Length: 288
Image (tube, rainbow, N blue to C red):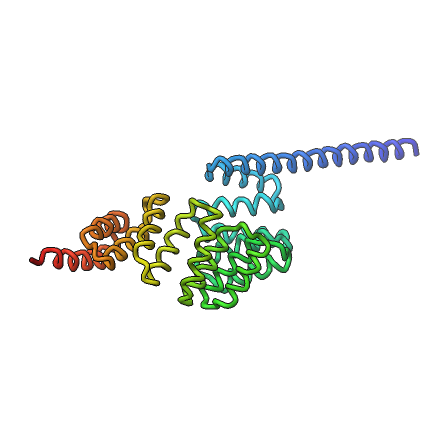
């Protein structure tokens, strides 16, 4: 009996040792996963996307259920332009945690970028169901609804976005785009102006306000807005194109030509259309 009890005791000791080692190993793997995920976050802040992806991948080797590492790897892949890869990452994160609102939101953004407007709206709906205060989801769902042609739905989302965050310049710009689409130019100009007040370096808002002013026939102010848009973004093809058109409407065709030439430099794919327009202008300028 003593030998039997001794063997049982030894067996228990071995089990305890093995269990302890397993626990330590599990804790060590979990700690390693957290460390790699945190370092991946640091690489993201440093805008080194490749190193960030490497560390998030290591984190997932140590802990395949690390939702944050999976989600953040999706963010890094999206930033690199790998839209399909980012959607796969967010989907994986949601399989690990079906109530993870940020993954629904980010997948919605990625799906919208991929042209899947319906899928994007579905994801934004789910993100808002889980987190009704997610301002970014309302704002992005609005742009998806506008792309779908649902202007009233987009405006409802943007009004709520602005109510939740009255200082979000992007929301005013997006609401201005809705008004512009409906040819409500004064309302559009008002929203674009608010966007530029909140963010004086918002090149897109100046560009859009210029277009609204051009459509109203206020060509001088339109040119002023395009000038500012170009100061803030010297590679904006649309800003040069629209300024060239506004200058033409003002009868300053000789000044419009350099803008069209700049468009050709920045967007060679637009050459057939722009060259036709430029040749038309030059033929008029060459007339006696």
